[in-house]
Length: 602
Image 1: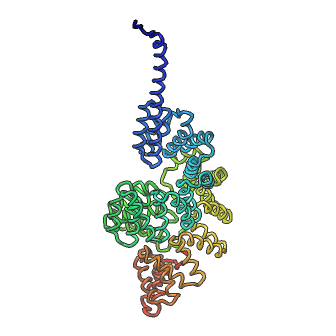
Image 2 (image 1 turned 180 degrees about the vertical axis):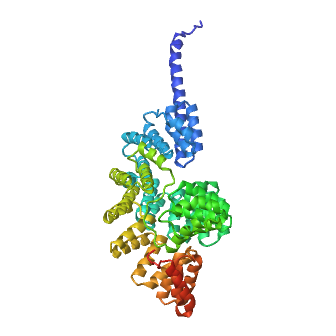
């Protein structure tokens, strides 16, 4: 007989099969999610935030919870420069335990980008407690410290980042940038080269390398590197910008403008590129366009004296005299106003018929000698700076601008108290040390000023600080120290115009007029043709070295550039000598009337 099977065992097996199938499906889903997360991390490593976002959304669709992708998703939006959406994912700090180190680190990056330094510090501290030996985290901490004015501490953190991961290209790049600030361009090159040995196709690092080569005068090598950048990234804005710099230096303005145009609007975020664009438009006769660009730069960097001077040139070229005096009369009132600016503002007042305002400025321009050391001007009102300082008095980034404005307002006692307090709280801040030196100088403490300035120079030896230290050494009767300082800067940065001016002055002081003439001649040919003081000093150096014909040419050029100033008149008179005694006598009389003599120290 045909028997019927016993199916009771099948009923018992169904739940087991269902569980197995569910586990299998779940495992497959988890596997797909993990695969998408890996894809997102690869995209983030190459800076492709959009691809990373898409992969992470697929991971969530495969079942991964939001907390498990929050860190990477926030980073993806940071890469897309969408800070608002990045904060939606990062701001709550709800990460899984596996995601927490990365999540807090990316949150710190977001806070740093938005200028919330204290919040960035808290986020990095949270990450540091979880992963104290993370090289990328120490690099972020270095950037935070540098942004907060803790420059020596930033250097130490960058050293930790390199020590923990000697192959980290970003750590090597940042350390090279810090070395450039400390020791100059030549010292930075080995750091960039070390990074390129590890990742020869890293476009960002190639850009730093190319820029450094260009500043060192190694134009051919710079061009080779920029061409490689364009091969790797055909629309690389920085590569086209750097090539535009080369074209501008060669005097090819149309080519430089064409290259800037190819770089696109991304350059508007780069201060040096804004400066170049402004100069190119000025050279092309587009004064109003130059004003727009240079005004944007000057507002972003109110302490950038070069930017302010270029803006003055552009506004003057635009021909609006009322706008010129409105914008630059306050700068002309400063003790360190250049004869050039004094003359421009004075002539603008003359054109407006306000001779009573023009006369004192033109008199100052005629008598002007080397500019005194004064603190850098701030463009933010004192009340606003006071509020910022009150919010975070220990941060050098808040205190230094406030002190500068206190000095400008004549409140020296208040300024000195705050400056010394900040210097004690943030001894690694180059800005705090430099400002403390300025205040000590004002109070007559020359030795104390040099001590503070030297500590600032251990972090960053900019042009302002170089001038301060050289002047202090000369006033103290230590020309040897001044020469060693200038020689060291030129070894590291051979094209530094400030150092070259000082080198020419020191050569003249030592009676080496041939060297002084050689340096000043180069400065005149490479951007100093319209600088009356350079031409006057060149005339003196050429005459003393025996080149009377060259001295007459430079002297006449200096005089015609700034007729009211004594240095040009005296230099041309000395160069003319017996060849035209009547004109020489008239020029000397004009020089005596201006009550100034040429000073080869500036």
